[in-house]
Amino acid sequence: MTDELKDKKILVIEEVEDEKSLRDVLHDKFVKEGFSVLEARDGEEGLATALRERPDIILLDIIMPKMDGLTMMKKLREGNEWGKKVPIILLTNLSADDDKIMAAITNDEPAYYLVKSNYTIEDLVEKIRERLSRQV
Image (tube, rainbow, N blue to C red; front, side, top):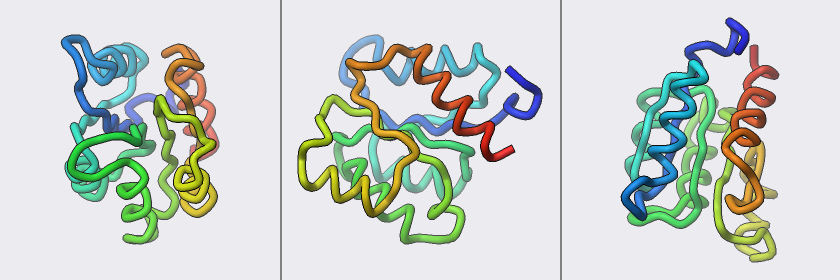
């Protein structure tokens, strides 16, 4: 990792669904890659953490309790200048065929929309590096 990307903050907002959750796996991988990792379990907690900590990039699941990822992304984008610009990668098991998802992608402009089953963790790290390198 280049020095410019070292210590960049990633916020992972993912509901824990099983013993060794994706969030835990991502946390371990990102720490090994030199990123600082923040975590949230749902959209409400994720929105509060994002506004308080202002991470450099957000990984956001769509289906979560309390507040879904699309609603959280919309609130973040409407909230302030930082929220309008922070890169968001949507991670989901849902296809982008759904009208609500397509509208959110069009209106709130996530950096990427990734279906979990189509990408490896290495692919995700590469997407994060690529997106963050544009901000340096």
